[in-house]
Image 1: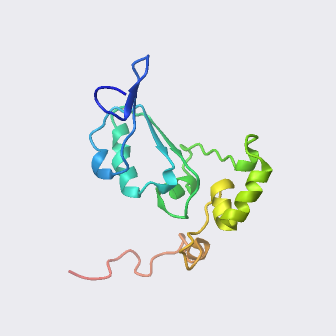
Image 2: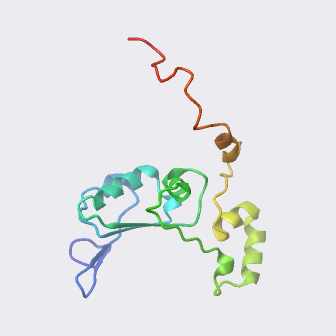
Image 3: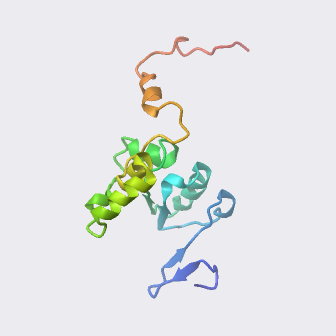
Length: 158
């Protein structure tokens, strides 16, 4: 703990670690952040993420998004699936971790059901349990190469 924030820690090298609340209203004002670490990013609301990223503007600091995959929406899903070469993506499913036994994974598959298990332990982005239509159906309905029917003109006149 340091004297500035009860949820922060000053290391012997004078680096300061600060834990921030999960509210966009309460994270503004930090600047010159050298490393912004967003844990469980798939579950962080987009407005909170968008309020955090300006903290890197002055420092040019690094941004790390770490998470179990969530539903097929939000900034983490979009970032993971983007073609942006600035992002390095690392995926480590539970079966690749020697500290997690196959017996535990088998128990979890039974307890959680297939969809939740694959999301939580297999690093798969799957449709929300509340989704009526799968995302792939919507994605297939759009062709980015098509010209707009109005040829770029406004649909209405002033």
